[in-house]
Every structure is written in structure tokens, then in C-alpha cells.
Image: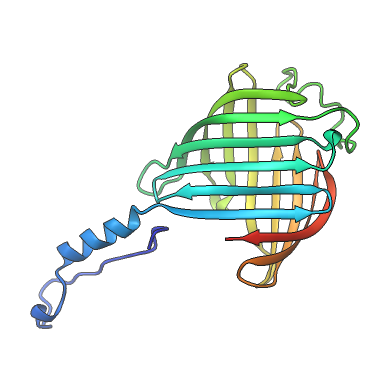
Length: 217
């Protein structure tokens, strides 16, 4: 209900005795109350290359979230993005947001398949070695639930990102991927063991290959 999956059905000229039923007007008030409630979510990956994950507090319109990638060493990098935004429209495809981005890394990490990270694909000088700036952007949900995300930071640097979580390969196996114009990329697999625990492995352009467990709440 809190994630927007509730519905109220009503019929005209029904032969059922309405005295035994909750009126549609009252039912909709209850549904809207549940629909607007905030709920929490967490996904925490603990792998041999470090930790990555997401914390979220949201309802069907507003969402506040923090994502992170924490390597074991400085050359693997430490990154977090905190955002708050609101879904727009009846179908809620659009998600404008504001937030803060922190990224620290020293030279010597995994070799990037796209070459030098000194500049991004827009030709702008990269600041991913020591970035701490405000951000503003808008995300759009594409077909097959891919997320296209365009943003600008406080230094005027642009970034476009394409990502997708939980692509079903089998009833228990999920695939994740991400690529952006900062020449960052990620691909991984997660095998669901229980409601809360999964085996996971992924390759990240900053942290390299890792494997371990993911805790989902």
C-alpha cells in the first residue's frame, strides 16, 4: 500500500446491499492515507573490494536517499551522493532532485577501460579525485525500468548516467549495471538466498572486482 499498489474499485447500479460495504469515498480516504505514508529501505553490500549500498526514506511522491561506494584503500575511492526530490506526473516518470556529492580517490586504482579519467566524455576536467559539491538534476524512468539521470554540480560539471537495478535473470538471480559520462561503470550479479540476504559480486571501475553478501531491508 505504501509503495502505491493499492486500488479502490466501485460499481454503479450494483445489486449488492451497500449497507454492508464501506463507501468508495471513505475507502479512498483510507487508501490515500496509506499511499502517502513514508517507509524506509536499505541495501548494504559487504564485499571483498569494499562496501556499496543505499539508504532511502520515501513515499509515492517524495524521496530522500543516500548511496555510497567505499573502497578498502584510498586508490579505490570513497563516494557518497545524498539527494532529495519529488516524482512528478500521474505516472511519476520524472524525478527532479537536489543534493550533495562527495568523491575522493587517489591515483593507482583499477585501469579504466575508457582510458584517462582526467576529463569526462563532455571534455570537462574531472573532479572525481576530490569532489565535494552541491548537485541538481532530473531522472527519468525509461522502458524496462532503466533510469536516465542528467545533472549539473556546483562547479558547472555535467554528468549523464544510465542505470538499472534488479534485472531478473532467473527467479533468484538479478543483474545490475551502471555507466556514466565520468567514465564510471559497474556491472554485478546478486543471487537471492533469503528475504534479507543475497550472495553478490560486481565489478566497479573504481573498486575493481569484489564478492560477498548484500543485506536488503
